Image (tube, rainbow, N blue to C red; front, side, top):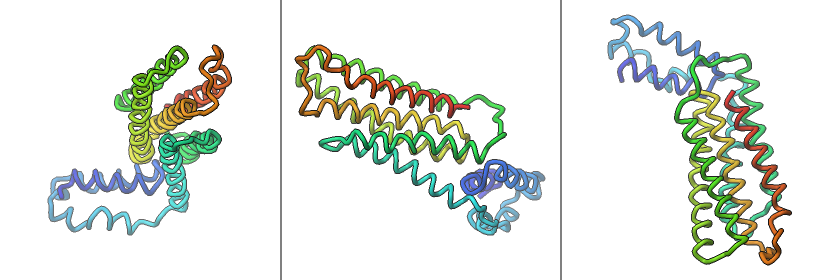
Amino acid sequence: MNADQYLKEISARVHWKFSRQDADEIVDDYKALLTDAESRTDDFVSALGTPSEAVRHLEAPSGYRLWLAACILMLSCVALLFLNLHFSSQNRHLLAVLLVPGFITPIIWFWLTENGYRYHKPPSPAILALLSLMAAAVCLECLLFKSVGRSLSQQTAKLLYFLLQIAGGFSLLAGAAGVILAKLRDRRWRAVYTAAITTLAVSAFLCSILRSMSLDLSVASWWIPYLWRFVLIACAGTFATLFSLC
């Protein structure tokens, strides 16, 4: 392992375990240690021990277990939303139970641990690209859902269900990546997570309506009772995502 690889790996490990300010200081110390040519030799790098050994020797911060608990909670929310999408009969109350901690946890955690920490670069283009994809998926789902009121053909239903499943699977992966990268690289990746659980919630909500035994498409205003719930999910998700980009 050369010096650059060593720095890259130890940076990931300390950013996962420590707060961003502390992790940056540790990485800067190792960069200073490996600046001159003699220190960048493979023998010198080997003498430092592996990155995992080096991080293990550092005293674990008091908030590390809290971070693990928060991480498990966030990943559980996105995973359960994905599973709810595949249930034969979705529990709409479960959406609220999962969305509240899903939106609040990443905002509060990174506000507490990175309060005052400023990034000097704009958000990664990958963040903006993923947000655009998920926003497009929600818009397309809604456009197809509007056609339900006119005709619920088998082809339309299959297309909508297929889109819901694809959007759900993509959002699951994007949400998990958002949590991890928010800790390792840039807290603004949490916006990908909040957008992912919003997309999953919208997909599960639309799917639950289509599978509802009480849905009466013969009534012209059949969609009105569901509108306020959809608007609430969309507005909460949009607010959480925009705030997470800060």
